[in-house]
Figure 1 (spheres, protein in one colour):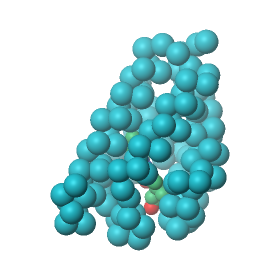
Figure 2: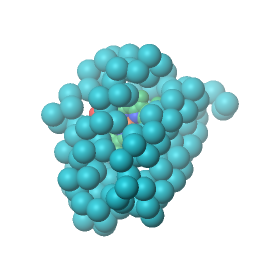
Figure 3: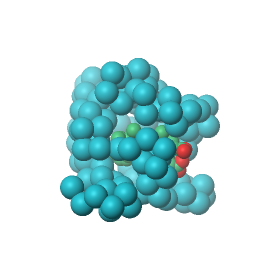
Figure 4: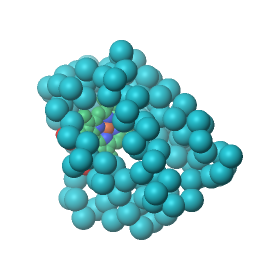
Length: 130
Ligand code: HEM
């Protein structure tokens, strides 16, 4: 198996991840409530991970803050520990399906760390501290 080497690899990973996440029994409904438009979202999320993996994706140009984006999402449909847990499970499985190596490990580690920060942020924003 090869490692994540290019933006095309990230795009491929994201296509497969959202195909699974959006039809998942536990978290699929959240994407429906959010009316996620993949045509708009995929290039943005690709920039996000390209920035983290290769330092080139230019996510900043979108002027968005993922913590804030999910805090707003949490107001529409509450995000709980089990949603992040499932998100990470699908993400890890999707990476492991086709990639292995330092970047494959790194993207899973970063996803984990960001998910923990997001959960903490949305919990504070909605006034429940775990
Ligand atoms: C419970 C788990 C999660 C759910 C249900 C979820 C769902 C969503 C949805 C619906 C959007 C689009 C929001 C909008 O544009 O209005 C979004 C955006 C995004 N998500 Fe998540 N997400 C989750 C966890 C994560 C995690 C753990 C990460 C990163 C490791 C992440 C990274 C992003 C990024 C970068 C965006 C794009 C923000 C932008 O438009 O600039 N998400 N997410």
